[in-house]
Image (cartoon, rainbow, N blue to C red; front, side, top):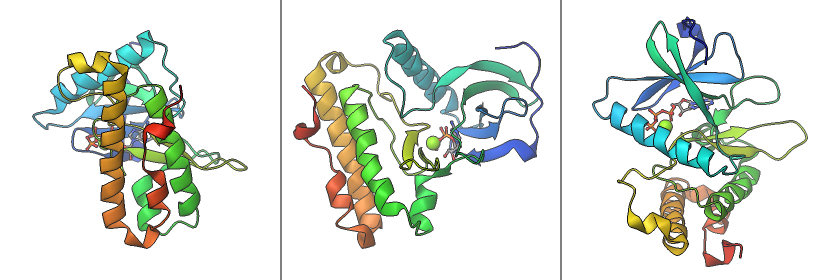
Length: 209
Ligand SMILES: Nc1ncnc2c1ncn2[C@@H]1O[C@H](COP(=O)(O)OP(=O)(O)OP(=O)(O)O)[C@@H](O)[C@H]1O
Ligand SMILES: [Mg+2]
């Protein structure tokens, strides 16, 4: 990345999580910059996240459902961490899955169907999910294409890389367990969306051999 200081303003603000504030890059609209909050655990989380991206890059993982990490930059708000920004075809930042669920999106049934494609992709590419919730998934709307869920956060393993992660069967089991826990939460929160939600649980049948 360049050495020039990137000047971020509140106009660039996209959203905040517990650990970082996310801004659209003022000069490169296809990128966003994350700045750590003062949360005590922010540094640890960032380190774990970046290590996981390093691993994904090293193994040349297929990141089509994940906003990629591009590097660091200096900003007026401190050190920035640059990612691909998830955008709709009209150029606006894609909305979160939470937004679509809370606003009774007319596309919600289709979005749920596409969520299963995301899950199957994570499973078969052995991409571990650590913190999956409805604000960590954006739904990219491109005209003429099905809505595409993209993970912007919550991949990797929060616990220290364990020996189990070397074994494919253990990794598959972990991804299935964590995904299905997320779907349970979704199901409790949105009973009106049954039986569509019931269709998007992961099982062994989704593992491609
Ligand atoms: N690549 C991206 N493209 C567009 N918007 C994004 C991107 N990454 C994050 N965002 C937005 O910024 C919000 C906060 O980012 P992020 O989830 O990385 O922060 P966090 O503090 O790590 O979150 P959490 O509280 O889940 O740990 C997201 O919920 C999303 O709305
Ligand atoms: Mg988040």
